[in-house]
Image (cartoon, rainbow, N blue to C red; front, side, top):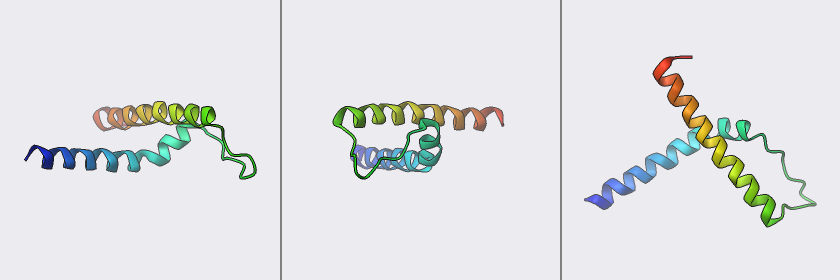
Length: 70
């Protein structure tokens, strides 16, 4: 039964992440990659950290708007 709840919780988190993805990417402000010059592993790691921080900001923004209005 705990696995069922755990799987449901994971699915809800993934759904929330995907719904916030457009706002998250706008807040991260990352440029698109040049197909001729792929990112290095360090650049990818840096971009992933930017997306993580932007996701936290997007989530906090949506939560604040939900609690306090726009």
